[in-house]
Image (cartoon, rainbow, N blue to C red; front, side, top):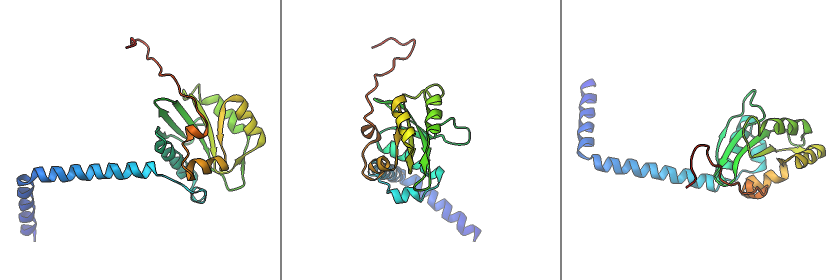
Amino acid sequence: MLVLLVQAAEAGARAAAQHWPVLASLTSAAAVGAAVWWTRRLVTLRLSLSGIDALGDQDFEYALRDLLVRDGWTARKVGQQGDQAADVIGQHPGLGRIVLQAKYTKVGAKVDSQVMYQVKGTAGPVHNADTAVVVTNGSLTRDARAWGDRHGIHWIDRDRLRQWAEHGIALHDLLRLPARPTRRRLGRPEA
């Protein structure tokens, strides 16, 4: 049995060496195909509210990251214990840096103003965010919404989440985020 395995491996190595251009082309084609599949998946990503409600809090954060990526942001999930009110951080060439604080709740639960205070205190100073957003699959209290509106903390409640996740409206369009001028790096002359 061992002799047969060695002979098969030797025959495979000879065939690979003899036909390496074909193998390289097939490998490249497979990689391109996988990239196209992944890009299409993200471009057409739609999540139903019932599907979101079935997630756990960690998966909710990953879903928010994937929705940002779908909308053209580079994004990563950073949420964990002691995350200083940031679960997802994204970057967009024309819109700057965004911080999402995810509040996964049971349907019908409300997020209160305390979350808004925390996000306001950390989004800019700690995470260097241009935009801060509290996202919940539930709702926010009237005070939380009003406080967020007064102090520049955007919010996504269940209705807005439906528009973003199910209907595919880009988050920056939904929130009407203004374009940000490109930041000049210190010490580099402008071209």
